[in-house]
Structures are given as structure tokens and as C-alpha cells.
Image (cartoon, rainbow, N blue to C red; front, top):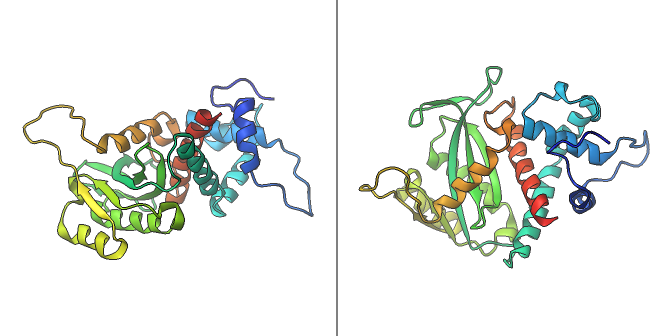
Length: 263
């Protein structure tokens, strides 16, 4: 066992997560690494923000850890684990698996110097980097995530994001209302959502006469989720060469939160 890092899973948390971990493949070289430690190592990278090569020596070999992370990104394992935990968390809160309302918003973040793919400039936020589009339910739990260049406007990114929401099928069968901010306001976007998905878009605007911090109905939920993500140093800036990797780190951050709650 490794040292007691703050990011490590407890026994109860691992027992909850273990049934969702893919079993080793039959034939060929058998799996000998301890999967509990592999997950601990991935969570260490997520929370501490270190590079894969700088994993502590008492954790599994970094090449092994990264291989599991990369393979499970490619085959959708992280998304599958995340979605199962979200369903459990909603049931634990006495909610149906499918939400009736969702909130979408975006966050522009700077990218590291070595990141060159899908990087743009957000003139409104004055940020060069990428933009994270989130869909959350009224509990703040994440539905699909989209990471794009920061130059992508809210309406274009919102359309791509809602397409991913629709692909969830029965898990969003009861969805009928989407809450957005002023960046998504306008007939073309709202009419497009109604025509293609039969969802109603409700805009929540900031009162012009109010100064400073204002708690906006519904919108505060997604802002709180963005706040949860900043607790992971790997997400304070986008260090990932591929946007798909950045998306999976967001799912991983939510997996860690939900496992701790459910256990």
C-alpha cells in the first residue's frame, strides 16, 4: 500500500467503486497490478496536478497508470462509471434517474504553453485557451461535458453540448427545461432547441441595477459545480493536449466527489 495521501480511496469507497472497474482481459499476460492503487494514482494526478512521470515512487509505475487512464478514456469506461454513479446519487437523493431540468454554462480557462490543439481567444473574458461547457442537473451533478477552443461562442458550443445530452437516450427522457444565461439568449438558439429536441430554454439574466455578487436562480447550481472542479489542481488550467482528455478529467473529478458521498 502507498502512503496515506489525501486523494486515496478509503476501503468503503473502493468497495463501492470496485464492481464498476473493468475486469482483466482473458488470455495473454494476466493483470498483476493492484487496481485500487492504480485508481489512487490517477486521483493523485487529478488532485495534486503533477505530471504522470512525477507520480510518487510508492504508487504503481506511471506508464502502467497512464495506460489504464488512456485506454479507459478511449473505450468510454470513465464516462460509463461516472454515469452509473450519477444515477446512484440521484436515487440516493430520492430523484428519478432522468432529470426534468438542466442548467448549461461555460467557463474559459487558460491552457499550458505546450497545448496547441483547439486553442482560441475568448474576447469577452480576455482568455486565451479553451472553454468548458457543462450541463448539470438541479443537484449540480454533471451530464455531458464539452471542451472546445475558447473562441467558440456560447450558442455554437451550446448546440454541440445539447446534441451530446440528447445522445444519452432514456437517461434524459423526462428532460423538458434548460436554464441558461444571457449568452445563450436569442430566437435562433432557443428556436433550434425547441425544433430539434422539444425542450424549453429559460434565460436567467443578472439584474442591471444590482452591483457585486448576485445569487441568480438556477444558475448558481452550475457555478457551484465549476467551484467543485477547481478543488482539483489539474483542472485549474488546461494542461491536456487533447480536449477529450480534459473532458475525462472533469468526469474523474465528479467520480471522486460522488464516490465520497455515496460511501
